[in-house]
Amino acid sequence: MHDALNDAIEYWEARRVSYNVLLLGIVVTVMSLPGPHQQLALTGHSARLLLLFAVLANAVYCAAYVIDIPVQLTGFGGIWRRWRWGLFATGATLAGIIAQSVTLDLLRV
Image (tube, rainbow, N blue to C red; front, top):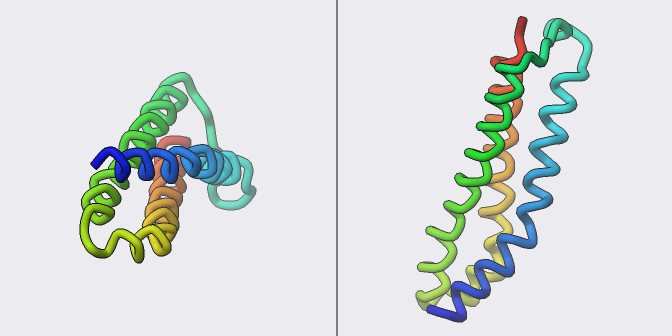
């Protein structure tokens, strides 16, 4: 269990910065794009909500441990370590879609 936990922490925490940069990039891009959503306004209230969602996004990121550690402890641990990037890619994609949607909803005037 100790080795699986250490391996999970090394793997997932090394990718947390990339995850956060991706989400930040999406939020900044959505805020700066011209078009039908050109009238975006960052108010104190929406800024606090975006901060709350950033904290929640990082809490949800920790859900990867719930999947990763038990699978490492099975007979599929070796295969899983080679393919768990798929969990990262799927989670980051879903988080990006949610970040785009939440940003548009929160910042719409």
